Every structure is written in structure tokens, then in C-alpha cells.
Image (cartoon, rainbow, N blue to C red):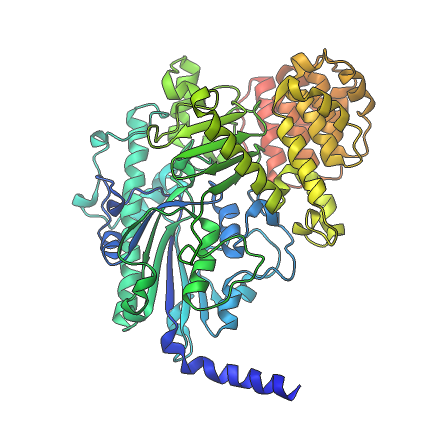
Length: 622
């Protein structure tokens, strides 16, 4: 015991003595931008401060976020664990993480760092709170408030280039009001409008705003860098600039293509640490869960074994692949997974019957999305625009980024790429097994199971070895999008003891209802499962039967869930009724009831959309 206290006292006394050997770390994070930065080769970008930072640092050209939207991605960054393993994968959820899972800044604090966050969090878990993670987390948080002689880890977040800065004219004007005439863009000059957007003046205006918001962000970054220099801390401070995901426009933000997950990242090291990352360009693959572990590595802090992320500067840390996940985006579910190597991306759509552009309130407010909808209504769909306005998606997508940077030409069915398809498909499946992909469990089931498990993560990572169930769950979810070849397994899944497996059995049969209805025993087994103990299974079974033409009593079973006790089951039911279109008209009253007194706004949004479509009205809700 005496030895313990003596060791503790010595370690505490040692921290200030070695403060000069531990780097300060300044993080500059931006929202909703792709690599539209001058030093990344963009000819239109006006970003002198970031370009100057890159001249003295390293440009990482293959950096990818784990999600195409802020909160799930930032949850992954702060925990250094994939969000669909921790349970923070749905946009605007509130996971319970295990007590042992300490967000990485807490290790910096334990090591004697003063840690500040200014000021975005979006971590999507209940505890630990921001006050527990940071010494200071607010719009006033500043590294200058640290005790004398203490190294700092400081995060600053620029929110001005969020998608709302493009969509909202008042916000755009406010953020860019300080730009000079030479820092403005000519919308007619761009020759890099993505081919999946209509080339209209409205779209070009959005593209212009994106660039000008980035220029305003660059000025913000320059001011923060100057503060460090003025304080005499420049040669003691590591600076890392990054974005949380791609540009805040359709088929980019929320998506797992390069447009949504490929982000700019610059790392500048002072001379005393320069050997860890020399100036220049580095094309190694980096996933955003690697950000925290890399900073820990640079600060000499040992990373815990539970982290999925690895130091991208560490020995043997070169990745072969980076991974991404999409789950609920606001009011709509669309389970998608992706894996990318340096040249190819493989995308797995677990819900291929859903269109690329599901109706979601927030993106529908954008001008570019409105232009896409106009083109759809006018029948002016050609080329890439037609691909992403389709009513369904392929189960698998494979893209050669070297020859197809916009990911338009799907090579999944090309025999010449069969080997690469198989490689990436296997890598993705193994990743899902390794992390325990919670996104394959319906959200309403997660809500039921997390309390008993003790945390959301523990649902698939409890005290007992659950690897067999994880593999079974991942396999049946994969088979649910594969069609007739999987019908025997999907029917058999309806008898499984676990409701998540039964859910995927019903969902898979419903996905291919036209052919599944004629498969021996499918309809009979679904009818027998219509009174399942799990609301999410009843909803999935009701959906399948309705799609097979077996509407009575299946439709009413789904409608009854609109007044059930579980908020996420209510959302799942409202989505199914919306997707059933005219078939749902007999239960219009249930959808209208969904417009009031709901436990979350997402149920109201979906119900509003469904009611408007059935009544031919245009009422909107926030």
C-alpha cells in the first residue's frame, strides 16, 4: 500500500516537470465540407490559411469518416469506437455506453492535460457528460484558461458551413458578411458540378455558397492559429484540421460515398515531433475513429485496448480498409454499410426497396433537393440524375474511384470485378462480426434490450460470448436483401427464438413480396407470426403480408402499433404505412392520430407526409 501511494505521488509530481516535452494539441473541426480546399487541389477554393498550414504539415488525402452525418460520426471520434458498435448510430439517439468506455479526452485529463471544447458535442450518449469529458466545454472554452505550465488539448468547431448555411440565406449572409469582393465566387465559372445534380442556376448558387462558407471557415482557422502563435506556443503545438463529413448537399451528406465521407485532414507537427509525420502528402487510409488514438500516441498516452481506432502514425498501423455505416437519418431508416480500399468502394444496401432519396424534412428544405424534385416531376431524368432518383437501390454497389470519382458506374455485376467484389464483401462482413453491428437490431428492440443489458453496447457484447448470435444476425440481415435464393432461410428465421432474427426473416420476405408470396409456406408462416410478442416483428410481418396482397388483418395490425407504448415502434409503423401508399388508406385515421401527442417529432413528420400524400394536401410540420 505504501509503495502504491509513493508511486502515485511521484507520478503526480513528474507531470509538470515533463510538460515541455508533451505537445499542446489544437483541433480545428469544420462541419459539412468535402475537400474543397486549395491545398487538396481544388482550383476554386480560396483557403490561404489552411494552405499555409499544409505547407508546414502533412496533407492526408485518404481520410474518411465513419458516417456521412455529424452526430454518429462525432460519437465515433470521441469514443474511438464505431458508432454502430457502441449504439450511437442513429441520428439523434441517446445511447447508454459502458462505464469503462471513457471518451479519449478523459485520458488526456488523467495525463495532466487541460482539455477544452468550443463547443459542439453531439456525442449521442447519456453519460459521461460534457463536464466529465472536458475541463471546459462551452462557447467560451479556451486553452488560455489552463493552469500555468499545463499542456492543452483544445477543440474548436466551426458551424458556419453546416448545410443550413447553404439552405438558409440569412445564415449564409451572416457567415460570409466579412468576405471581400475577391473572396466571392462566380457561380457560372464552376466546371465541377457533380453529375447527379441538375445543372441549374439554383444548384450553382448552392455550390457557390459552399465555397464561400469554406472561405469564411478558413479565416476563422487563421485567427485561431494566430492566437497560438501570439502566445508563443506555436513550436509546442500540434494542429489538426478536419471535417466531420462531406458537403451538406443531397447524395453527399448522410451518404457513404466519397461525396459524404471523404474529408480533408491536415496535420501540422512542430519541429521536435516532425519525424512522426514529415511535411508533404500522405495517402494512407485513415478512418475518423483513428483521430483520438493518434493524438494519444503523439502525447505519449497509452491507448486502451477497447478502442477500434488506431494511431495512423503508429508502427504497423496502415489500414487496408476504411468502413462506414448509415442508419436512421432523422425520421427515416436506411441501413447501409460500406468499405473502401484506396481504389474501390463496396456498398451494401440492407434495405434495397427504399429509394435513395427518401423524403426527409431537413434535406427537402434545400434548394438543390428542390431542383432534383422538379426534374423528377418533369420527367427530366437522365444519366446520373436518373440513377439516384430511382425508386429502389441495388443490393450491392461497387465503384472504381480511380476511373469513376463520382461513383456512378456500378460494377457489382461486372464479371471482371468479381474478385474485388468478393474481397470487399468479405471484409465488410468480417468487420460487422468483429465490432458487433448493433444497427442490424431494430431501434425499438434496442430500446427494450439496453436496460436489461446494462448498456447499449452490451446488447451484443455482454458477459457471455455472443459471437455465434452476431454471426447469425449479420447473416440473416444480409440474406434479407438477396432475393429468392434466401427464401428457405428467411421462412425458417420466423421460428427463431430471437425477435431480431424473426424481424429480418419477415423483412426479407416483404422485400421480395411478389415472388415470396408463391414460395411454399411463406404466407402461412407470416400469418402465424402476425401475433408475435415483438411489436417490430408484427410490423415487419404486416408489411410483408400487405405487399403480398394479404391486407386483412395485416394492415390493421400495423396501424395498431401507431398507438403502442414504444416510440420507435410507432415510428417504424408510420414508415411502413407511408410506404404502403394507397394500401394504407383504410387506416388513414391512425396516420392522422400520428400528427398529435407523439413522443418524438419524427413520428409526426412521417405521418404528416403520409397524410398529405393520401389527401393531396401540402401541410408541413417542423
